[in-house]
Amino acid sequence: MKRGIVLINLGSPDSTSVGDVRKYLNEFLMDKRVIDIPYLGRLMLVRGMIVPFRAPKSAHAYQSIWTDKGSPLIVLTQELEAALQAETEYPVTIAMRYGRFPPREAFDELLRREPGLEEVLLVPLYPHFAMSSYETAVQYAREQYAQGGYKFRLTVVPPYYDEPNYLDALAGTIRPWLQEPFDHVLFSFHGVPERHIYKGDPTGQHCLRSPDCCSANSVAHRTCYPHHCLVTMKAVAARLGLGAGQFSFSFQSRLGREEWVKPYTAQRLADMPGEGIKKLLVVCPAFISDCLETLEEISVEGRDIFLGAGGESFHQIPCLNVDPAWVKVLKGYAEKAYAESEIPA
Ligand SMILES: C=CC1=C(C)c2cc3[nH]c(cc4nc(cc5[nH]c(cc1n2)c(C)c5CCC(=O)O)C(CCC(=O)O)=C4C)c(C)c3C=C
Ligand SMILES: [Fe+2]
Ligand SMILES: [Fe+2]
Image 1 (cartoon, rainbow, N blue to C red):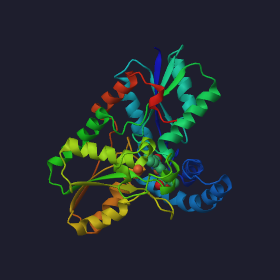
Image 2: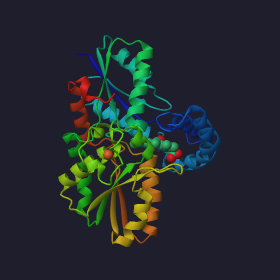
Image 3: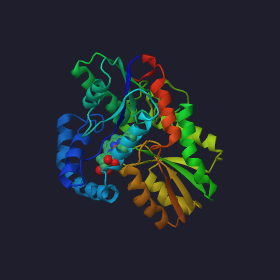
């Protein structure tokens, strides 16, 4: 089988200028799977209220993490591409949901490198299903695939939040940090509005209907983001031998005033020192590559909140990035045969 691999991530602005950040935010937030309200309302909210205020603030934040080579998210995804390419004979390239590197360019590039390509394997760099991350990236790639009239088959790697090799690799990046004294490991996942969870619940009566819905069996869990996050956290904690009370989860990056899934990371960071948690490790498994949300929101803002509330030490554990064990896991995904039924539509 002549196969090619596309690693798809979120994307970043082209530069840290307010104009480029505004362009990026407009594209990102006008995505109907990110702000899921009718078009005209979304347009007014995004163009009139969110972006004018957010663009200068976000541009400033991006300036604090930007590297000589560009955005950390893009650079780290390119480094992952190179590391995986060194491990597999299949041609590997990257795509982004927003901004530069659209999937059609990735497909064309693979066809140039492998004429007669029979299958492209799309690997979303999101372990958990959410309509604002995994689903929008996959749909975008599927649309461009259909528009391009390509002859090869497009196969999508399903969410791997519970896949043992991924969990082993994630636990492996955390383990060395547990050698120094610590009180707690916080698993901080990117948040989503609660409305997205209600909307994605095929039963219409399970998700967020009871405090422990994510632990009770349900078909809704196939696409339930908080459930996926909880499974990842519990499986990693078990691999690390963490006891009850030594770990917990929270959700970060809330935007706007509506209710998002809880607890909120910023609130937990403010409360933990008062609960006796003074030495904190934070891991952010919703992100494969370090990015604005880990390097600035957690490592800078989050640290200030925690230390300002009486915390003594704070470390953000780097994301999987180009960890060699993770690259081996991706090689395994790249070489596996997938059944269509595994993949959420
Ligand atoms: C309604 C708004 C947003 C939802 C829902 C959302 C979900 C979501 N996002 C990620 C991953 C990333 N988000 C990143 C940045 C970012 N996210 C939002 C808004 C929502 N995200 C904004 C406006 C931004 C831009 C920066 C800012 O102004 O705060 C990034 C980092 C990008 C980078 O260039 O470094 C990632 C990665 C997931 C996984 C997710 C749902 C689970
Ligand atoms: Fe986001
Ligand atoms: Fe749930």
